[in-house]
Length: 411
Image (cartoon, rainbow, N blue to C red; front, side):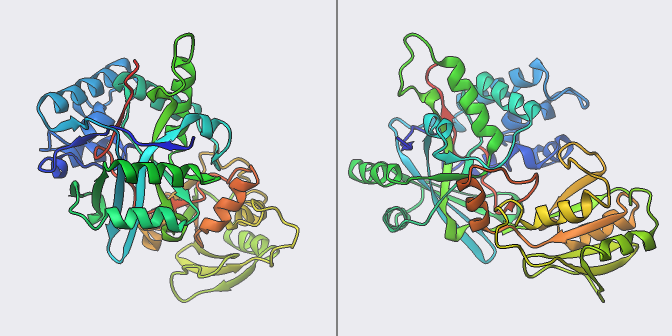
């Protein structure tokens, strides 16, 4: 069993616009507070409830989780959110400028995740994982969908496209002008066909949401025991899966606070011993793998790395690994980018201008622009049961919080 329909907790059609919110982990407390100002139904009051407590409140305090649970009860009690009466599948479409992707929302199997059939490609941080566990337990619901990917399948894609021809159940514009549109699939024959088609998939891949899926597995493990049913709702987690050929991955750039004690000339000389270095007349956005843009002291450079060796493993072949292993580690002295505070990461949607601003302001000494990791590269790493380096992918657009939630009926 890989996927099942579920009875979603969702806004009413007329309240969806008031509820829709960005994912909890792409905004900080100040940004969340500003986005929710004057919007009492914003789901940020549930996903980032510290915004309703005094500034400086510890976001991991008991009071924060309790406030989130209270806010969720308020939205239900006020009729802003309602629970479906029967299990359904949901078609989920995101439309952003010239890009559109359409997938299917379902309850994914925790057991399949634990068995490796739903592939991970990133390590999780204990503090963030603990936060999501406490969030799920406080709400008794999973409110942040995990972004999943499947290798495009004609049967699934056809069923999804057919369902999306009818009038939508919900539609709301979210952050960055992304239009989120949801259709409900409640016909028994279509539900059975989708269940069969999804369960026939050998693999699903987590694109975004490693902490949410890991937390769901921990909650499930804690609730197992005498009398617990194998089909209990805690054995499932909320996911939305899209075909791989519709996914859009942006680059994930790096900024480093200092040159590890080197002067500009010595640093450039050290880089030139590993990479080709060519001054550029303007910003460099890499258009191919193994090429990089570097911004240093007000000037852009184009870096090129040697071709990949035929026997390189799928992690070593990634541009993020090439840059880390050839430059950031040995030259800048950052051995563990997960833990070293000298390195920062900038999602590609912020643009090359953000890299210039970080360096020009003195917040960083050097910045690196990367070519986006490909979806096939990600799947190759996951298929090999390996892990991606940190901050390797930035998926855009992102799923909204608040439009569909999975309630755990067994507390």
